[in-house]
Image (cartoon, rainbow, N blue to C red; front, side, top):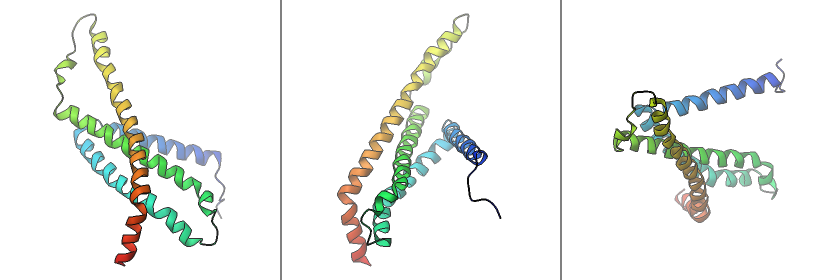
Length: 166
């Protein structure tokens, strides 16, 4: 019978898998076909996370009606909801900026010179790519805030409407 305890090797294997998958998602964001796919996946996943923000606390309270402190025991769920919402906003914005640069931005400014200073010219043009990371991180935070505001303002009315329809 296998041990139910996670060993150090199991955690390392899980960490390596997570790093590999995260790297493949970010690498795929550079290709035009995958940028569109990432936009769609992040948008749909964000809708699923909004539903999870609304339904999970109510489901927990429904399962454990006599324990008012039960939501604190499921705090790890909120950590994953927060991270998931941030990552969806991040990936959506990163893909949107990449798609914008791919189809509409003027790429004539990325001309690489030849000669002894060509490496400097390439590095100078490449330095503008840090902005996309800043925009994506800000979009992840804004997405998290917007989802929380949406859930706080419209969460209960949507649940009440759902129960009235059933």
